[in-house]
Length: 188
Image (cartoon, rainbow, N blue to C red; front, side):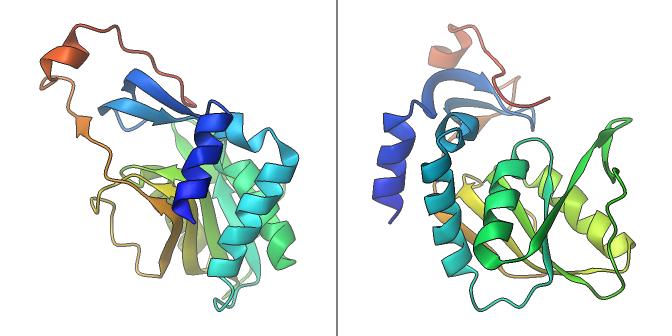
């Protein structure tokens, strides 16, 4: 399944090669620009239906995602599961619930995201759910590029693609990347 999904990333121009600065601050030779993939509504529906199928045994009441990258994934995953979708968004440097979104006591959520490298936004979203008295039933992502370095979230973690993409600290770049200007194409 991941080979045909990687082919879709390449066909839509969503798998980029170059020198990138990730939201985590790490540098990489590859970047998954999921927005370029998910702009195609049929592809977004298909991919998130695949993710919903992998999460099918997980009981949940709703889906939550971190803005901005996870919103389309969360919306489509919620549609495929027949559940409501809410999202957390940035405010004063961190993620918060806004727009009147509510999390009920013991309400079970799947946290949806497009790409995980270090899992920071997913962890923030997990903490929001738990701080409001909800439960995190699972994490569902399209691409896990953490190479096993993501946090342990205390619940099942499901992805459609697992890739060990090399990342580098800014002060420890290989020569080929140091000679290429870095770009930061992701969300801020």
